[in-house]
Each structure stands twice: as C-alpha cells, then as structure tokens.
Length: 103
Image (cartoon, rainbow, N blue to C red; front, side):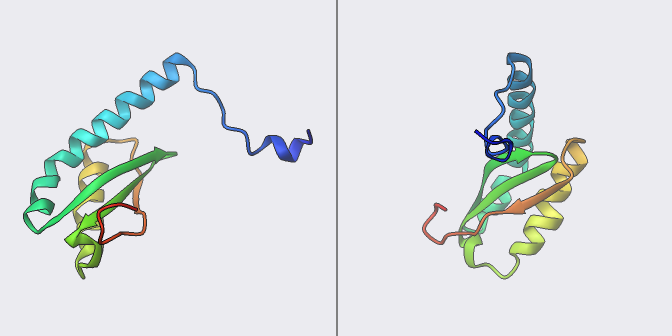
C-alpha cells in the first residue's frame, strides 16, 4: 500500500483518548441541552453530530430546517454558548438541515 493510501486510514484511539473524547462530547451535549428547550419551543431541535479539532458539528431539525433565523440561532445561540462554556470549542458548523427530522 502506498503512503498516500495510508492517509485515509482512521487512527485508533487509546483508552485514555477515548475517555477524554467521551467526556468532551458529554460536556458539549450537556451545554446544548441548556439551549435546546428554547429551540424546541419554536418547533425545532438541534442534534450533536460530531466534534473534531475544535469544531462542533450539529444538525438543525424540524422548524429550524427552514427558519430564516437559523444563522442567528447557530452563531449567537449555540456557538456562543458552547464557546463560552467549553474552551476546546472554536466554532460550530451545521450539516444541511432536513425538514424531515434527519440528515
């Protein structure tokens, strides 16, 4: 196998790295849960998809999928709260929203 082909392999995490990642994901989910009721009150929801290299990926569901305020909710709500409470978070990005509740 060439060196270039090896770049597509996924690095196996050690038990300690997995524990640290799981703790971080738990803290992110806990923080998202603080803002979730406000999003749900408007008929939407937010789902944590992943975290990698300082970037949290979320999916906006329900009414959020077509809402004109989605950028404000993402940037001034979710991202601001996560960056304020979790120093490892540098930004939040959104997967393409789906009006059907999945991506």
